[in-house]
Image (cartoon, rainbow, N blue to C red; front, side):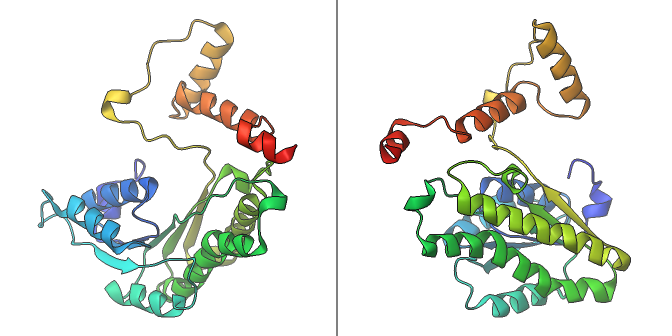
Length: 258
């Protein structure tokens, strides 16, 4: 949204899966303020209604559209075809599909059942690709559209204790990479976001902007600032994530592995 003007967003039909999550609700807020026609999907009707109320309260009806809600749970794939039809019928087309749903699991491989593996694959892989395939014919007919996959750095890197999670993220990353090459001729774009930890920072919790005194850290910070990345939060969290996930075990995990 930071790189898209309101004129580009206005009137666009934007579908967001797991819109009730932190990332999903923030996307919903930004697109709603930009005048997009939102289709908000999520596994909890109460949370969807709460998001709906927060978006509509205080908004200008002359500049925004009332969001449409669709109860969508990728862990239950039986009615997915009906839900895809429902999403398509909300506005008759889809301009942007943001695949934001994700199920995270951290455990030793021997402690994960095959059923859990299948559930994670449903939420993180089969659900998003089924939805993408469902709206793709509409985009091809109109020769326009955009897919946005909110994935994970673990779609690029495999780390210990994330077997089924990393596998699902690798799978969905590969699918959308292939899709990008296939649909380019139709004017359809495919974007993937491979983030690490996302920490919602409130206004009162903003990271310190004090310049670092260490020369090496000052150089790294200057490079990160060039690309609009917080020099305080991002590298520290990535380093922590990489070290901990690569084998530093907490007490409970250590006991399981003895």
